[in-house]
Length: 219
Image (cartoon, rainbow, N blue to C red):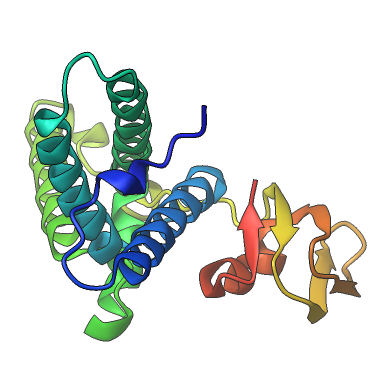
């Protein structure tokens, strides 16, 4: 039996247009989740789409409550809603883990971006700053009780940065004329063409900009 979770959305104007909009939002969030999951760095946030999807889920739950409990579709719709909730939860949790692990470097890079180009949502930025401050306070407390020889912390050693040269699997959604792959062992560059629909394994740094533009999908 095919399940269309979008059937549960309460449409007020154009039913087909609303369904297309809901489908697009779900697709964007699912792609953002996979990209975030497999990307070594934190990517630009998709909070607006996540919030939109959460509002739609609330409407779905309200509509489900109106259905008869004996309706065989109810359990299937609930399973699909749980799947969507899992995607959202996993997406947000993955971002928080990256913020915690790369906190200093994330904040440094974020401070150099314009507000319109921010990678972190306002809530994530607040969390990152509070996490960094709490970590500093924790280390300061510990270091005060250490012998003088060891009670100083090199700030550079606190900065953990993602490995942008790690390899990722990807699928192309658009034809890309030029992708530069760095050969760090031989200090050489190789230029390749990525065809629409093709799949590849290559360093993330070579395709990072295309991931953020939506031209390729990490898988």
